[in-house]
Length: 251
Image (cartoon, rainbow, N blue to C red; front, side, top):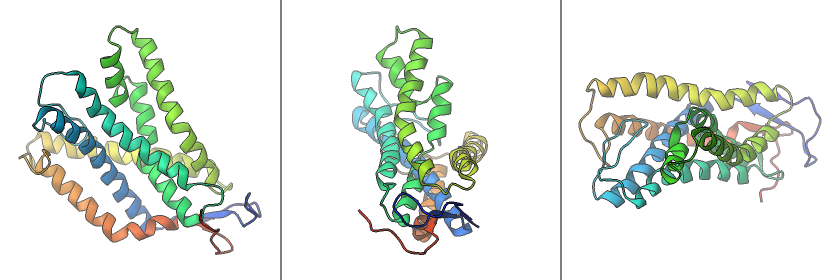
């Protein structure tokens, strides 16, 4: 259902965008979300494989190395973070003032599929890759100070993309739309991955080793969402449209 801005025009001089949610777009976005999640984990485990020479054990959202601790292992948690934050900042670049609405739509999808709320929430609970790195780099640091450093770092990385995404939304109902885009991806991840998929894997469902050092269940899950994304990706650029139905010139 399209949601229009009440203002007549945006800063480019063209009419303000509509938030054009469709079932097809929602399916494509959810597929992008879960494909991102797996690529984030593979970034960790692939670097771990390079360091250790073997794949370590993992599930849908956590992993271990197959070798003893060495200074190089810091690159394993860094790899996943570079991928996810990199996706957000690519989205930041795409949502420029004079970008076409199709490009802005893709930018929005990339930012929120990378689950910025998940990064904030996890580090605020002293978890996540960010805190793994900080604990390894500064083991003697006061825990509260380390937490403050972690939260501050995450906020510095996510606020600029989130602010630009917020600004790209239509003014009418901008806050609830933004809140939904921020929270729903993490809720889907929490329910489907943390509360359903991981417990099934722990019970032995498709727990045998598959490809890339992942359980077979993870391979099947990821393959399904990759297929869905391949079939639906063309809907990702459709969530923002201008009322005059004329795209702005691309950069």
